[in-house]
Image 1 (cartoon, rainbow, N blue to C red):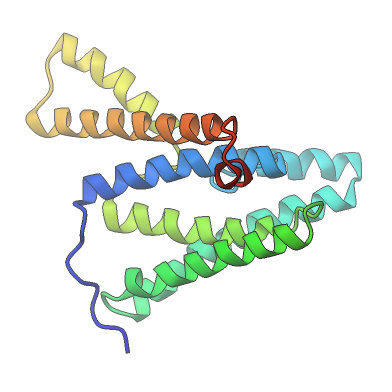
Image 2 (cartoon, rainbow, N blue to C red; image 1 turned 90 degrees about the horizontal axis):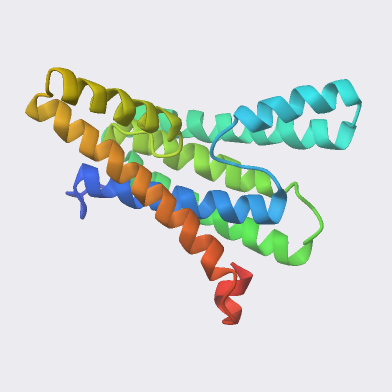
Length: 200
């Protein structure tokens, strides 16, 4: 039986920055491999609508499945968090690892299929919900961070920001930087001649 989640290795802020980096990395890899995102679903919803009108049943199935599995991952984390009283991160971590590993194995066996991306969508639903609920920060929806930084800069110039508001603005800046560095690293890593990095 899993014990209560141990004291975190990283602070809430550092954990959020680490997840923002991983989300940036993950988004680039998913787009390169699948021409789709598993973290942000405005595009998946638009593609579902467009392909429903265009009558492409394979793409309708793919984007519907991506949304379904992402929501399933979100719901699974909420269920774990509600039922396991403080052990949700301990139990969710190996589930995320298993889903990502299964995706890798299926991709190696069937590289032309996109359907195994659904496992990544479920995995990302789990860790994005964990980050939002446990660390109080959305690290995959960075548009809101751009909006916060922009409007906070105006407030800073016009009337100033409290210490807490300034801390929140810096956190948004660091989430944006972390996401960018993750995306940059994933794309740059693809140009290296090292087989392990090139296959990621």
